[in-house]
Structures are given as structure tokens and as C-alpha cells.
Image (cartoon, rainbow, N blue to C red; front, side, top):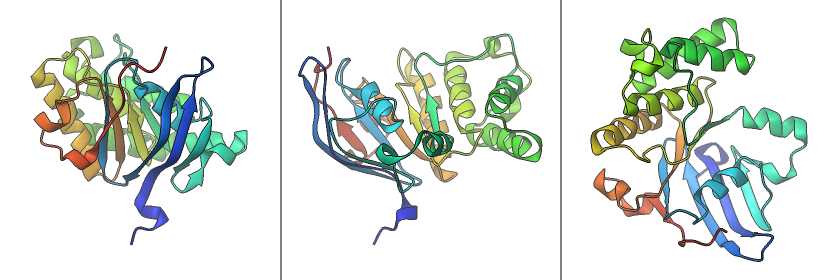
Length: 226
């Protein structure tokens, strides 16, 4: 039997209706366990990014419940929500990196922005570099990285504060297969490190190509978001 600690994200009977009256999600339910990767797949305008924004409570659903690390995010005060968001890593598309700074400097910049200093910052830096396989590249300027490693750097920035879950918005987009594989390797490493991963992709065949079972894939309806 699963306990609260085993579940990173739980979405129950989620409904979202746009101001234009379009029902994007209708009774959507799923569970993301700790140390699990789950894919949300669908074509453009199917609601993938919208779902991530709901989980971060940038938007409110029309109906339903969203738990992150056992906390109902829809009922949290602004102060408690801010603290909970510190446990959620987010990887946007396109990725945000500082091309003239080294890999390590990119991560230190993110840590300073989060107010993380001292021993905790050093631990977060080393963990992010180790889990993503970027340790050998830490002194390289980001502009010298290949496209795949740039995406991985954005993932490393999302985990340097030791979140319980990372939300990745289409990190495979516009990448050739070898670079997509590099991203998948990094995500699998996060899972082995105890981080839950919810990742979106417009390529509905991608999870199967990389050997992920059907039960880890959540498919959204096409073209419902104006």
C-alpha cells in the first residue's frame, strides 16, 4: 500500500475549462510516484504545458485536486505555496541558460537566485552535476555545449535545490535522436537519484522508442487549447 511519502504528485478528477468554454481536461486523474518518470504526450495545443502550470499553481483548475508532496496546492497560502514551489523543479522550453558562463557558473547563478548559499549550495551543485553527467564539462562555457547537453544543463539547474519533482516542458523538442537519448539518460539518472519526473513531449512515439512502458504514458486529446 502506497503512503504519502511514496507519491510526488497526485492529480484527481481535474477539470479545466478555458474562458472560451473549451474543456481541456475532463476528470483527469493520475499519480506520479517518487523515483518514477511519467510522460504527458500529445500534439501542440493539447494542454501539456497547461497541465504543468496547473501543478505549479500558476493557474487554478475549474474543478479537481492536485497534491504535491502530500500538500493540496489549491489550499495553500501564498507563503506556504512559495515554500512548496521550492520543492518543484521546472525545465522550460526553450531552455534558459547563460551562454557566456560556464556550466558551473550557470548552476551557481541559479543557486544564488534561490538564496541557497554555503554548504547547501556546494552539495546542490555537486549533486546536480553528478546526476546529469555534466561534471566533466563543468568548466566549459555553455555556448560550447552541444544541443543535448544544453538541455541537460537546464535540467541540472532545475534540480540543484534538491526538489521532490521536476516538471520538464518538452525537453526533446527539435533535437535529433542522439541528443534525445542524452536527455533520456539524464532523466533516468534523476529517477535513480530519487527525483520524480513529469515530462511532456509532442512526439507521441518517443516513450516507446526509448523503452518506457505504456503505463508511464498519459496521452492528451489533440488541439483543444485555443
